[in-house]
Length: 232
Image (cartoon, rainbow, N blue to C red):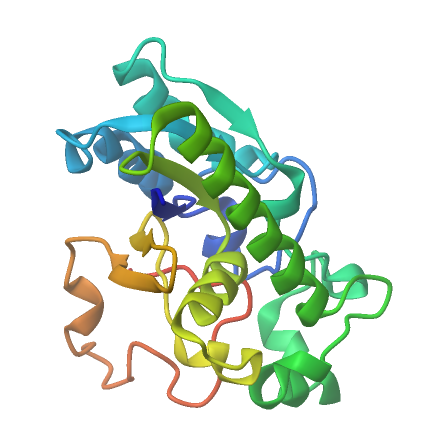
């Protein structure tokens, strides 16, 4: 079965502003995100890609544009099932404000029971994303053979949910997984089990450096809903 390269979109204007963008239109890459996406072709140089699949949202499509430009003829496919989680009434709100909402504790500790008012459940989000991956695995294998490699550009919570499925982790544990903007995660699927080959690889270790103000780079309490903004 094929090997899947999951790319989280580059840092967006919503990431920088600390806003949970969800499916809101017009959320573009910020300057750092554009630089991250511009570096993507060199990071994947030498990897023969059969296709690129993208979430329909602008920040994902902008992320893969340099990769497509560097490889004329490489097909782009838009897949609605890997679009961002529908956060419903949470969409467009500051993450700092959402921290006091009782639902946040459920999202953090019991994600399989979390359903966003006016939106979807995290369980439904995982199911559609995993279904999309499985369908694309079959499609790529049929068209390009079992050793094919393809890329899929999606969102933080989508990628974490797919990784959890590949590892056999319950969705309630998926907040233990971290994928920064424009990070690369690789899953090799086989007939009997998937193998996680890379997780959240950016090649940049800046987020591990202690901050001058003494704060811990990763909050240490809650996972960043939507995936967070990555290293400063």
